[in-house]
Length: 211
Image (cartoon, rainbow, N blue to C red; front, side, top):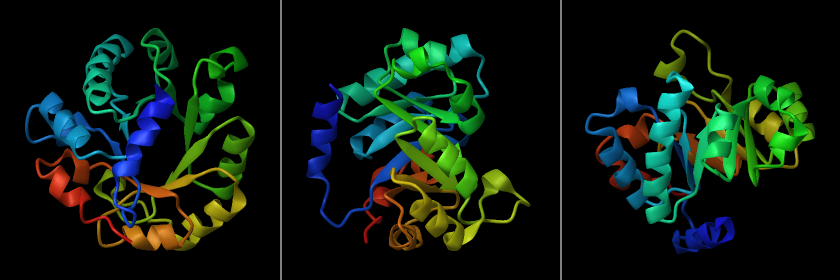
C-alpha cells in the first residue's frame, strides 16, 4: 500500500516543492473533515494528523476518519503522538516528539514502516536518526503564530541540521510559498505547512510552492 501511494506522487510537477500538511482542527474555517478532503484533493506528499490535544480515544476516532479520506485520494497519512492508537488503526507511519521516539520500545518501532521525529537542534537530529527516524521536521525556521514570542531559528539552523544527518529533513514553522524555496536551497527535502493548509483555498495555495 505504501509503495503504491508513494508512486502516486509522480504526478507532481517536476519543479514543485514537497509539502507535508500538518492538521490543526482549531484553525479550520469550515467542517474539519471537509477541510481534510480538500487537503487530500490537493495531493500533498503526506498529511500529518497532529491533533495531540485530544484524549487518545477521541484522537483515534478522528484519525480513523482522516485515514479513510487520505486513502481515498492515495495520500500517505502519518499519525502523531499516539503510538498505541496508530497500532490499533494499523497505520504505517507515526510522527513523534523526540522524547517519545527515544522511549519507544523496539518492538513498537517495528510496527511502523515510517518513523518521523520533531527536532530543534543538531544534537536532537543526530539522536533521532540513531533512534531509527526515517525523516525529521526541524523548526521553527521562520516566525510563526504557533510560537509567539519565541525567536525563529532561521535558515542557518536548518542548513546545519540537514548537513548533520543522512535522512530527509522537512522545514517547519512560518513556511509559505514565498520562503519555501529558500528552505530547499538550505538542504531541506521539503516543507511542512499548518496554517496554510487549514484554509479553504488550500489547493490554490499549494500550487504556489515551486522552486
